[in-house]
Image (cartoon, rainbow, N blue to C red):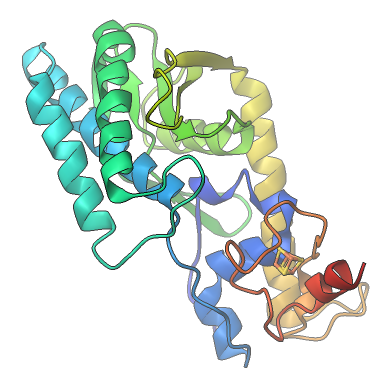
Amino acid sequence: MTFKQTLVRCSALSSYPDCPRRGAARLFQDEIEAAGYALRRTGSGIGASIGTSVHAGAAMTLTEKMLTGRLAPLDAVTDCAVEAFRTETAAGVAYDAETTSAHDAEQQIVKMVRAYQAVIAPAIEPITVEEQLEAETDFGIILTGKSDLLARDDGGLRDLKTGKRQSHHRPQIGGYSLLIQANGLPVTSAHVDFIQRVPVKKPQPEPVTDDYDLAGSEKAALSVLRHIAADIDAFRNGSEELGIEPGDAWAFTANPSSMLCSDKYCAAYGTDFCHEHRKKDQA
Ligand code: SF4
């Protein structure tokens, strides 16, 4: 059997170690279904939809700054972000306790974009904005992705995150760094800008910026890529050493203790590709 190229998005790297089987169900959905498993389709959550919309506004204003030296007008940026939200959620979205309706979501987006425009965007001189890149790695994997921007002043790779709380993104940031360098641009520092999503009645917190250790982040990315390469190889070809036959779901470790082990987040949940959550339910 021949396999198509193994593509891995940088955005998949940070979550893969949390449950490699859930990660595989996203990364290798076609291949896993071709092996006879029927995976679920997980719907989009409100957090991800708001994140995509805020990114659309940020990309608009930074592209304008890259081209003209000035930020785009605030009204145009918020309109762009709200329009992106309406497109993103046209087929429906699951709301949560922080965002209970489309009306709330649009107000949150406007506040988050304003915070980005006021605090983060003025300090950045971008030389690339959301440029799609890919690069071959030593593991037979093609790494793909687009970081939010590379800044002119300090060669700083920057990525914007939104959400209920801050989390850590070293493998993803390391992946972007490797990707950008493989495409001929120097990266000398890495930063993640975080804008918190809070209920509309609460004041919008100021964005915060975390500096990432570049060498450590790149090592983290390479470590995850090495694991993904070994796992998909065992799934395709089996592993005598591990007692795994070709097509065995156990090529990918399962972690039912993951906070994201649920039908909301996992395409393998409740399918033949993973029975481990049942043990968690029984427990
Ligand atoms: S059901 Fe739970 S253990 Fe199984 S793949 Fe999904 S997250 Fe992992």
